[in-house]
Length: 258
Image (tube, rainbow, N blue to C red; front, top):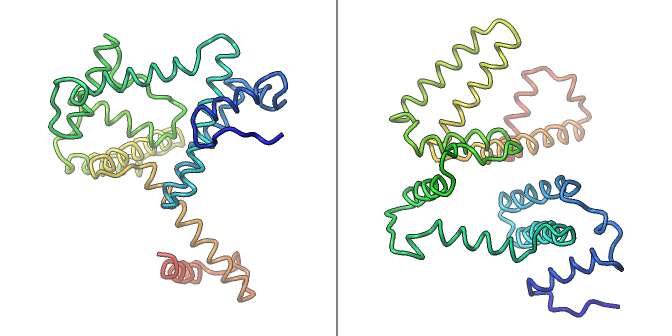
């Protein structure tokens, strides 16, 4: 029997998920747990990012739906196990948004977005006295994004450079220490310090390090595939080309795919 609910309503999604998890529902959905859905949840987050990077709004609408499905499914699993209801999820986020935006829902004032972010962190500290300024960040985050989020929070309490020159000087220092490292353990540590300093420079320049690297990865992938296709079309073995020829091909790819 075809489903007859209004597919534009949030309540319809909730009903569909409940039926999928119900006695006559889908065996796959009924088998899922909070833990089993972790890979799917992470994948859906990345697919949302891809749609944003591509500027594909139709795809973004679809991927946000997939992500929302993950949220509702997690909530339904919790309800089935007597842990919490979807209403509890909504109550928590609605309460948090109101309490963290007193400049909108109360009489507080915020001059700009930076002040809003600082107020947000201050309110979090007040809600959990003794909480570390850098706690609460999920360590499963991609390392670049995690580093930048930690640095941003540390900077909010004043642990930061006075200007970009200091940041770049620190980066130069870390690069020098990497060049002087003599064993794999020291090189690994110093390389990590270089990456951390680069992320700090990105923060000062208003760049999201994770987005920047993802964009560069995409360009490299497209250009390298172009090089491979050119070699195939010319009956050339790419692995047998000299570095000079490969560099020429790379420059050609850069012109075709800026």
